[in-house]
Length: 147
Ligand SMILES: [Ca+2]
Picture 1 (cartoon, rainbow, N blue to C red):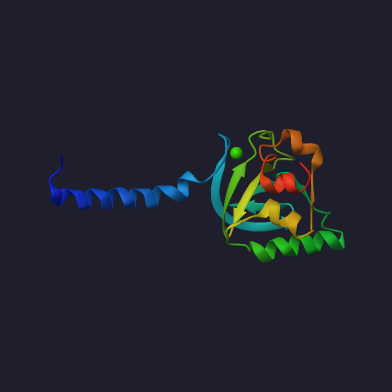
Picture 2 (cartoon, rainbow, N blue to C red):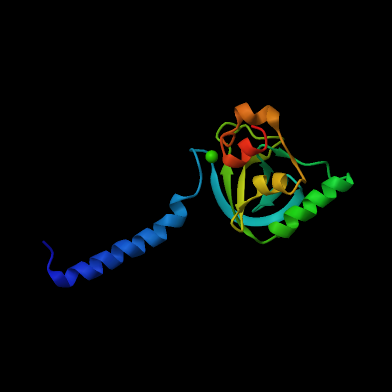
């Protein structure tokens, strides 16, 4: 048994360690890349750059940028996750081959999942064809939109 005067400091240390560990523990699913970085460019409604690396939103697709709807989708992403925001990229463990040199993943920004937000806002559509090849197909949002 520890002397009573050590119990409080030990409890305090444990609590502080838990507080530090919690944000890291709740990061990514699976074993693929888990990247924390800053948004350096909004390319379009389903692709952004994080520390200059291109990230394609898993399971979602927005119209091309030369289309009016594509521009609106890009503006929406800029609004909810502006350049300079800190994001967490959870690479899709079932699509680590990427897409045209882009990492495919789930992006968390300002407490939101961008993949989900782009669907919920009506700016994008779910990529049904990838439901069988995505780590995130069983997420609540993916199922809600048709996976
Ligand atoms: Ca993952």
